[in-house]
Length: 440
Image (cartoon, rainbow, N blue to C red; front, side, top):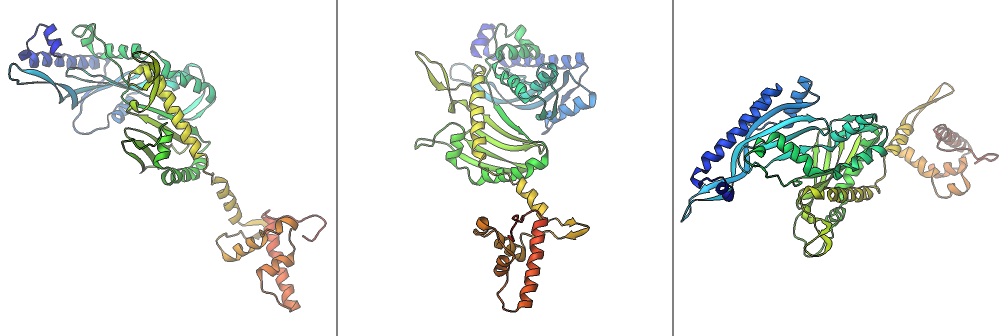
């Protein structure tokens, strides 16, 4: 910044007036863009969820393409400060508060997105976009039916083809795309900052693998078991393995599992330093495994170093976005493999419910079984004894197991009739079957 002031032919004592003037230019430009587009420019006070507000405005005004609104809020940003020094004042990096501009719009290619620009030097720009919105527009372009709710696909007619489209997102020419957005919203790039360009990095990458279920009833019982397994069974070593690392004596950092209940469900998050992997359900019908990378230097990518081609720590530049996708997909796959040991209780619950319901036969109603009642448990134990699997069983076998022996023939006849009624009940519930041409 000191060199930039010199190139502009300015003294450091003129710093405040210089930056204030160009800060005002950005603010006026934002207001002019809003006025030209006929969209609102809103100054926010207090903590407000900006994305929710922008989406609400888009829904209310029926915006399907173009600028939605511009939100302005005073926030912290990285800037510069002029401070006294022994010989002459000097500029130092400083955390300042300034007016930050949020341009919310719906792009023809990427869908709902926003650009954030602080109005103080060095005008660090942030661009947010969601791959689900981009994929939805890609599917529309190729006339592929789908069902989407917020940022989750509940159903896709051709998932294989949709996946091929999705895999191409990381391969795009991101510097060219992002430079176009920067030129559009930072007018200083056309005069004061020309021919400078931004160096684009990935501040945060979220890569999701979605498992779509036919309906919420198919996912809900399974998700409870998955949540319990991920919380209680995954160790720090497992978390490191998911993220492609190994636990060793020189590892310095924090590894933790965190469960958070949120309406209408819950999510579990495993964090290794600044990176992590999490699992949650979307709208009750999608199981989402998501790897979040904030600090890519924990991973490696193959690139050319100073002298040789080899594996080096992965940098934050957008040129490495393809590697972000590879690392995240591998982490999600390892996580799903680890969860595959959990059984789906839905089928057992369905059988249990069927077992407990009464049934009718020839106009007569018969009771269901209660697996928690002692008399029914004793009957199941009697029928499921190991020797029954070899030769089957007779009425007398079950009688001797359930009741004490007696020599009274009348009492034995009553007990045998009672066992016959129990066996008929099992037969009507399709739990046992008669062996042909036998009394077993």
